[in-house]
Length: 56
Image (cartoon, rainbow, N blue to C red):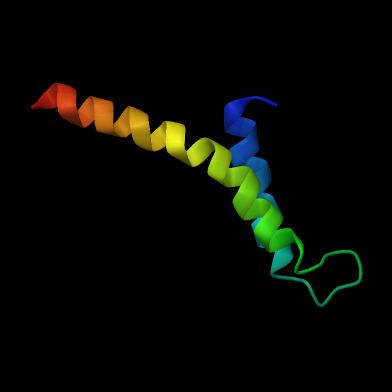
């Protein structure tokens, strides 16, 4: 799965996890969404740190 798409899928899972009281959606979607989105957060933070270091 492409890196940017993982972040979007993770955010969607977290958003739909809020509706856990509905039959199809569940609260299980919240931790799964966090886990999927976390795969893309670290590389983004690394790139931002590199850009910040280069500007100094």
